[in-house]
Image (tube, rainbow, N blue to C red; front, top):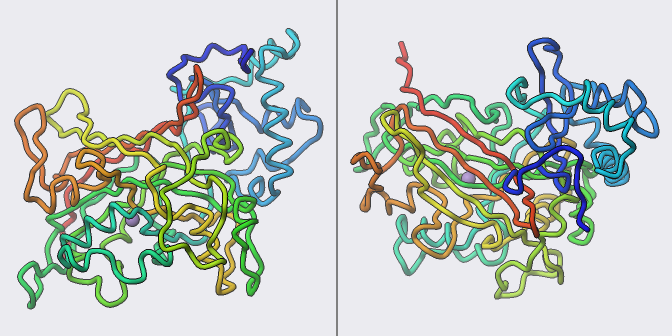
Length: 417
Ligand code: MN
């Protein structure tokens, strides 16, 4: 008999008792942000549970306005809390406790306002899908030089901007910048090739000391959980600025994440072997284990005149060449210190087929093959008023462990005086 909650949860819900993700929320009646978990269409207020001694001991940090203190506790604390929550929300809990929980601690999802769940110190974005790197390489450098000579030896990445990471639902302002599609001199205009990137993000729970790299064997212990991540990108700005130091303003104006952080313990049953790595990675990046994840991913687009969103891509995290533990290990191999709350993006997760690409750049092949929308409109890149939504879930037997969604709408560029 599989684990069941006394709360009714639709089998297609992302949030059954097998998930129990964490986030920060507030309500109209209690505007102070605090930590909650989610079951079906309800948020469970963990600050109240803690205060009223429904846990074996008092933790204190659930009344915080970010997950950081909880995250810094390490895997022992994460497991302990998860086990207790599973017991409390399980159908096997005592009738009295079920009634107590139902009466005051469950808040309908419509009544909550989700907050950015983590204070993010640093944000790094990788480039770890072979299909994505190959597609972009073909478009920018031609078939012969698609993958750079380093790509199969290390997870390529760049240090991004934590200050502009926003929660799902936040509007995205079209950036202005220098573009030079025909070469210099550049013009200063609103980006004409605004794009999304379908990614997953992972949060560092426990960091490492400066000078002490995280080994590939221990990397998993440092990761608290994952979210959906949209790395909004201005391709025309990127094409002009990216050499020789990589992306800068093309990606620093906004990165959206889904509000619920799904823990690595909830994702454990969905670990799979990633693509075969040939050539074999150097020993510090080699790990003989299933370190990929089978997470179904989907992107939809809705223009202002469409009644409902249209699916424009279906991908899966299992296609990713460099795993998140390899990314984290590589990041710290110099002794670079990660801190609690740091965020890493996996890089665009493109699949092998043309309908599984994770960006407009690839889906439309740099605008050569526009996407046809059901209302007759077409898109090469995103237009003002367009809404992009990403969803993701793992399929279990009779239940899903999902991420909800990350969504954002494009607003027109502001005038600059
Ligand atoms: Mn990216």
